[in-house]
Structures are given as structure tokens and as C-alpha cells.
Amino acid sequence: MTAINAYAAATLKNARRPAPDFVKLADNLEKIEQQARRATDMIHAFAAFSHRREPASAVDVAAAIDAALAQLAADASQHDVEIAVECPVNVPRVAADRTTVEQVIACLVRNAIDALARRPGGARRIKISTHHAADGMVEVEVADTGPGIDEAVVAGLFDPFAPSRPEDCGVGLTVSRALLEVYGGRIGVTSSDRSGTVVVFALPSAKA
Image (cartoon, rainbow, N blue to C red; front, side):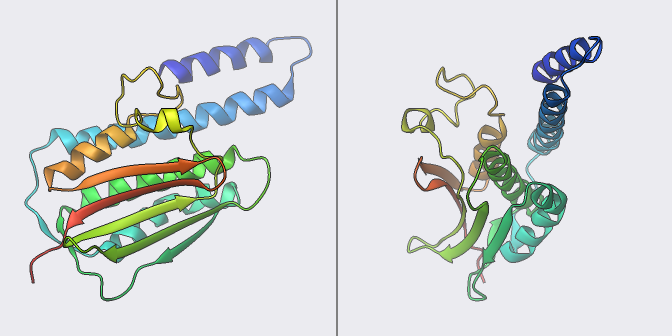
């Protein structure tokens, strides 16, 4: 909300000038929209986290991916982001709450879209893939072709108080990790300024 207030104040100041800078106006309005969407995502995530743990059920990961992408279709289209999904039919369901799985996927894809929107040129692609890991967990990977994250920053992405954490990075990753850990899950990030960012989370497979 602090960021929204700051961008709104700057926009109003610019708009009241005799000759407003319309490029800056558009830029600030876009930033307000991004921050407002992030705030909405976080409110939903915190609401889910504040409720008692829902009993784990057998969640269809492919269906959860489809539901999350349906929420973000307009944003992806607006920023010319192409999203591909690879989810083999033999990947088992996961033991979790469907809302949690959808929210985590939506958070990761939203972050990827925002990163790609800042890329001045080149392909804007997101690839979501799933597979059954050797330890019995089901992994979901969200990879983008964005600008990547500095290696020194990656370690602090899940710590909302880390000094190296980017100012525009919300608490979505922190909340996502907490939600996943409730069901015995995990999440990690790798990034490179040459190949974008890859986020992988895993949840236990549901017992047949």
C-alpha cells in the first residue's frame, strides 16, 4: 500500500502540471495497477494462511494449473507473454488443499509475467512443467525467459526482511513457502541473467 500511495501522489503531482508528462503518467499508472494486483494476491494468500489447515485431499495438479492460468490470461495477453504447459498424464495427484496449490501457482506465474513485462525485447515465455521426483514428491516448475535475479538476491527472496530483497518483490514467495510447508512441501529458486528464473515447488504425492 505504501508503494501505491507513493505512485498515486507522483501521478497526481504530474497531472496537475500545466504540461503533464504523459509518458510518466502512463508508467506510474501501470505501477499502481501492478502493486494493486500484488496487494490483492497477498490479501487472498494471507486469508488462506490465517484459516485453519484444510484437510489434505488428492489434488489434480493439471486442473490446478488450468485454474490458475485462467485467472491470469488477461495479464499474460496484455504483456504478450506466451505460456506453455507440460503435465504428463502419469503424474500423480498431490496431497494438499486445491486452493493452496492454485494460489501458489498463480503467485509464481504472476511474478514471471511481471518480470517479463520489464524485459525490453526478446521472447516472453513461461513454461510450466510437472514431474514425479525420485523421492516421491510431485514437482511443479515455473520457468521464464525474463531478466533473471542477481545471485546475491536469490538467497533472501523468501525472507521478507532480507536487506537484499528487491523493493518491488512482494511477500508472495514467503507466503507460498509457508502454505506449502503446511502440507510437507518445499520451494526453491534458481536464476541467471542469461536464462531467466526457475522456481520449483514440490508436494507429496497423494496415496492411491
